Amino acid sequence: MSQEIAKLTDNEITRELLNIVSDIDGELPADAAYNIREDSGCAARHSTDNIAIVGKTDGLSGLDIFVKSTTQGDRVFIPACITKSNIDELVYNDFHIEEGADVTIVAGCGIHTDEDESSKHSGIHRFFVGKNAKVIYLEKHIGIGLGEGKRIIDPVTYVELEEGAYLEMETSQIGGVDQSVRKTEGQLGENAKLIVKEHILTEGDQLATTDFKVDVNGEGAGVDLISRSVAKDTSHQEFRSVIVGNQRCTGHSACDAIIVGDGTVYAAPELEANHPDAMLIHEAAIGKIAGEQIVKLQTLGLTEEEAEEKIIAGFLSDH
Image (cartoon, rainbow, N blue to C red; front, side, top):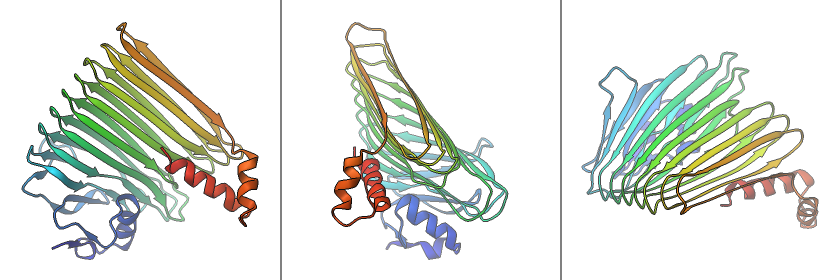
């Protein structure tokens, strides 16, 4: 039977954040493993025959998630929720994926503040993906509430992919996060594949930094880094990516950004080829919404503001 969220936490703000960042609306799937983090503590945890979630035993705050090779299409949910001001937490989550496993991991962090003090979540996620395993990783970040305190989310991700492993990461910062620094490092083995798709929206005076560095060490491996972002008002974004090709491999980095108002964007994609058959490509495009797009939607009855929001939503959801 499915697990009702109301039975796992009585915090209404937590339930709202879970719905936003992990698409958990009312209940969790009956066959899913999960750990719900609430205000620096564990609100609920459940393991399955295929997926074991264990609290850290080395004095660190966080989890070890063990995914067996028998896992085929299973899901695990590990959202983190902060529902009040004046919380500063550092969490270590390690994912141990056995050879041949197939799993979807739904993460995400939401911060709600109604006071003047800031709250911050720093999550360090490490992925150790075995031979020929497949992992889909979904992560959303959001800040809500009326408080003046900043909502800060700083995720760090480290990836090791063994031969033939596949990891696809889709990350979204969908509003309300005042400061974020996202760092991702990867090591790719033979014929491994890493795909990263990020969507970032900043408004007001918010700051967002993305920093990728991937070493493609295995022959036939490939990496694809795709970033789409919108910087509104006076917000600022920075995008840096470094792809290092050490064998016959492929690498692609793309940053597409839209500026609205007085927003600013800095993009610096880099490539390093240390093998003659390393095929590496980077591209970056920064601009504003085309006037003809606005006019076209206005002819369909939308106001200029509605047209702009529709174009932004389509841009951030399209890969």
